Length: 412
Image (cartoon, rainbow, N blue to C red):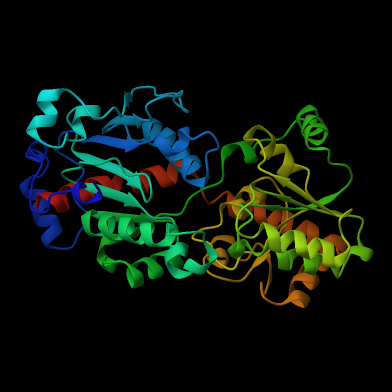
């Protein structure tokens, strides 16, 4: 089915009016395509990742992006492709919402694989993410690839998932007109491992969830603490408990300073490949009463959970972006984080860095931020100012430009 994502060489009939002579000239000269004198693009976005029972970062990304595109990009028309069941996670506004229901009628099945337009209506471009691609896409295709960690470290994942993802990612990379990713670090890995050239990748940073930028009222903070049974000050680590998230080393680094601070270490994320290592680290350090494993945390509690933390720790060995860093900064929470992969690119000069493989380095960073009031306050202010430079409105505007560029490139 993945091989049917796009028939190479086929041109979508609906794109015939997209390119003007000016647009063709601009591409030949290497300049950005013209945004004037063209009909609106009919863009379909796959919103199904946001409709899973426990949406991941992919669902959150596409929800915030789609909402911002509908609000900001009034020059194009949007269709949101929804899962077969479940409520649409955003207010659609002027956008259309369509359900993905295949197969269709008997006559359509006899005629061949149904096009995506059966669900969306006529479109000029489709945008999806790696791992959530409906079949039978023809015409311009924009794909967001956040990271390719399972291809870089397959031993950190269960079963044949890395092999399946490699086949899927290879097909998508070949089919995509343009690829979007959130960091230059991720872009380098994508072009090194997948069959996509540098000139087909566009780096567009993500942004904090607006909920983290708003003041969290006392009643929500109290409700969160009661629901999650949290008392006293704590250091927070957010993210699926996978091996690459490096939570076990964080536990051991925290153990080195546990007697110096009153804090609990709170790890919020669903259990995954790193869970056994984390529980072993807790047992070996004797910190069962100082480390709280929350498991999956309901989305409704996340803003208060972040707002109540004294420090966000991000110890990952690899991130395609590292959104919890920006979310914490937006909320005015100091960040101590790994100096690996994309994280320095995202956090800039507004975080306390450590070597994620060095326990002493982790402990020193935690100790400094938790015990030095001046450093704590400086990071709080620097982080908030830094996060203010990332907005979903900006991300949406840059993404809309990629849509126009992809449509023009495909036509030419």
